[in-house]
Amino acid sequence: MDLIKQLALTVLLGGPLLLATLGLMERAGARWWLWVWLIWLAWTVVLTWAAPKFIAPLFNRFSPLTDESLKKRVETLLERCGFAARGGVFVMDGSLRSAHGNAYFTGIGRNKRIVFFDTLLSRNRGAGNRSGAGT
Image (cartoon, rainbow, N blue to C red):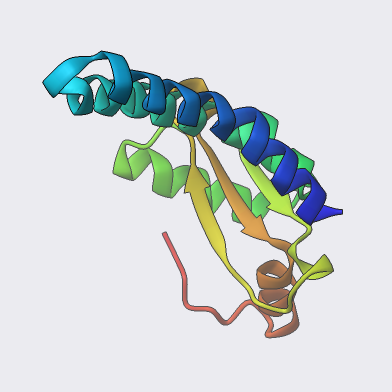
């Protein structure tokens, strides 16, 4: 099912970009590359903004982090670093596809968010939270 979703997104999001690129190569003269670069830059910014809230949920389930102790530690670290994740702190159902534990931050503007794989959190709970990660 993920492959079908990826193909659909490739066609829906990449198709217009490819057509714009080919059209500019044909009609924009010697500086076609500059116009293509500007369009790709704008497209990248839009996708970086949209991906956490609209694209990623097509492939994984995200739920707010419920471990209040960990959430407080993450928020304290974010404050100290000056990183505002207004989008929230989430847990992703990574265990459906892998046993790999990971975490990431993504997005721009109000769609910035922190995401922990559920496998990472379960591994830390199972180890008695001896990760040594502190704030």
